[in-house]
Image (cartoon, rainbow, N blue to C red; front, top):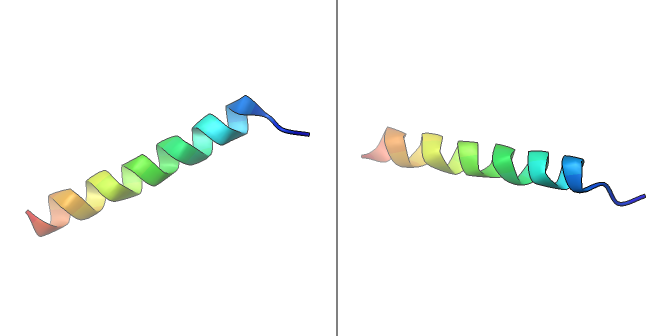
Length: 26
């Protein structure tokens, strides 16, 4: 069953990883 909650949580996790990478390389 598709759950918007898990989808949003997964997107947020991906964004957090991206921000961490940007902060690391900047």
